[in-house]
Image 1 (cartoon, rainbow, N blue to C red):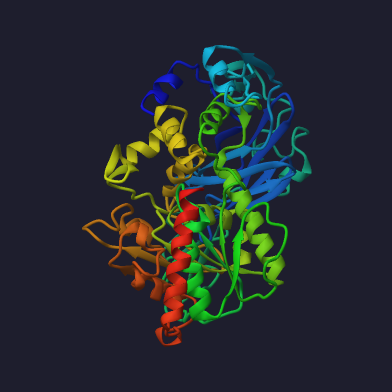
Image 2 (image 1 turned 180 degrees about the horizontal axis):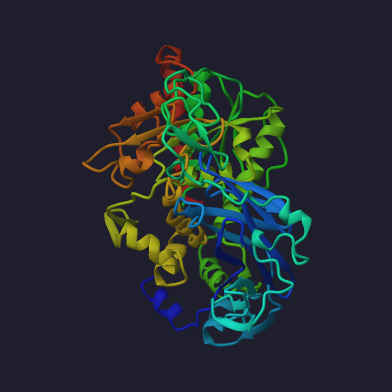
Length: 554
């Protein structure tokens, strides 16, 4: 096996072109972008400092976003990444647009000895790439600066300049001229607009861009319009909620490079103790309902169905992933995770006939579920969100090893460095893909992004969702993999800490303390747990053994 990375090192690496554009916009500013397939315009027109909502016009369509939230608009994805500074004159927002295919690509196939070797295992295997000749020509951005119309390519290099901005609508200051249409100008902020309380007088607050007298009282259990989210009466402060049981379906979601099979024991325990129907496994390909009752517990995956391959096919998988036959202008893998999870949630709702679900997510599964929750207002379909050691603020530490055989481990180095290296094409990602039998880059990218939940000071518990966190503590930092501070959320109904390691948090036998916290978060108590008789224990032992066999042959 040690020769495999060396073999792959001899093959050329395909440069990947990301089909997205990013940038900064000031309040009231507007930019235009040109690709071979789209003409885009984006304007930043409103900002509410209390709720941190930012309003954009994407091709003259109004889009209201929270930090890190993404919405689909006419086939395009717009993400509000956060803002800088807090005054009207300096307020800048960071954004990302994805979903456009900017270039026409030409397929080029390669024949060499490595391809011939792999073809012995897979006769249909080809090594092809799409030559998009992208370089810095993904798009051209047009904006007005110092009364000049500046055009820059996607590498931010100026490619053209016109001495006048006449005929170009670059900001709200151009409203009243023929360049700007009414659809844009009607949303422009007033001439003076506060963006933070610092711009207002004493005993005044910036509310919806206007300085107003304070109209709230902390501690009255009412979150007023002008009350900041840090108040104990609002969502990102302390929440006095008593968890009560409900009849929403429950979805258990696995973590990094894992599978639903590793949550089967937790699924069986919840079904036995709390009376859930065992709904089996859900994935993106599930079409039939194994249970029609709403009180059902499922194990689920955000991976594509049958994504893991075995044996000699793994080398073909690696080469197909890193020397793809399809266009190198691709949607990032983590977006695919969110899409697949969305299909799982939709299927669970449809089978149960409910408008919401409850989610218990372990480790990286929590990061994927949080990204799904933040997209397109999906928070409205999640009732309870229980996180088991999820690194939503980064905080991954320690060294990683992999057991090749019993008693023989391979040391892979620092987890932080490994995640950084395996997020792109290279030997670490190739090795992990070879070990796991599934493209691992998407998992690494997801964990790299997991530290951005509170990056801009946003509400850590958005939407009308009951958040619960269960963190492990086995050393001075955390559960041996994820630090305790990075897995708790300000504004959660309850943040629990138990004396268990990261991988044991999802196991009701190895970490009964975490299991009891899950039971409480679902609205039950320890008294609701059923007492197992001898036959129950024998059945559980046989089922756990069978689960282990299935995991070995995945």
